[in-house]
Every structure is written in C-alpha cells, then in structure tokens.
Image 1 (tube, helix red, strand yellow):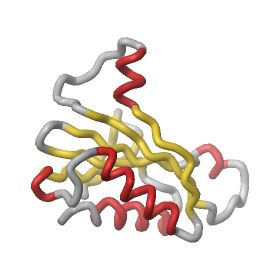
Image 2: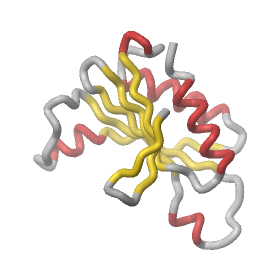
Image 3: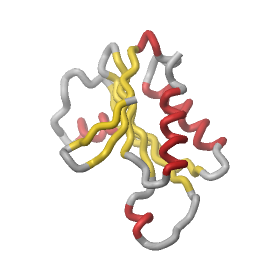
Length: 128
C-alpha cells in the first residue's frame, strides 16, 4: 500500500492489485466484500454505494479511457465526536477503479489511527 498526496494536499492510501492477484474479478464483488466487512464491524455504519463512472458519464464529464468502472463505498466509524472538527472529515469512502488488468483501491487518510488501520487491513485483504 502506497501513501501519496493527491493535488498536493490530500493524503491518500492506494493499493494497485493485478486482477490475477485479487480475490475478486469485478468492482461490484470488491464492494460486496468491503460492505460485509463494514456491516460486521461493531463501530462502522454502511451508508451507500456510489457509481462514480455512471454519474460522470451522465453529466458528460471527462473520463480516462483506461477506466472501465469506478465506484465508491461510503461508511462511517462512530468512535467519538469530541467537537465539530471530526464531522468535517466524515463519512469515510473507499474508491475502487477498474483499469482493465488492474484494480486501484484507494481512500483518504483517516484522522483516527484505528479507522486508518482498519481500512488498510480491509483493502490488503483483497489480495489473494
């Protein structure tokens, strides 16, 4: 898993998985796995799935031709609300993009280290 900066200000974690090394063969199957993990977690709450590719197509947005599918799963960890600031960085989302022979699974760094570690574990578990 690689940590990088998106647009020089958003810390994201990314794992590129060759399809031959992934437990699943589609974005939907990966999201099913992640949703099951979210629903089984005692402090996480599943919110929704978002089909980013279909949305961008519907508004005639620009799409890299390598992208075959791109979706997000949206959820929240409910550890605590010590003030207003944490509300600004919730809920969490994990993106899954199909690039033909590779899946890219990524998410923005979580401010809570337990949430961060949990998301990293979930994503790494997608590899055979």
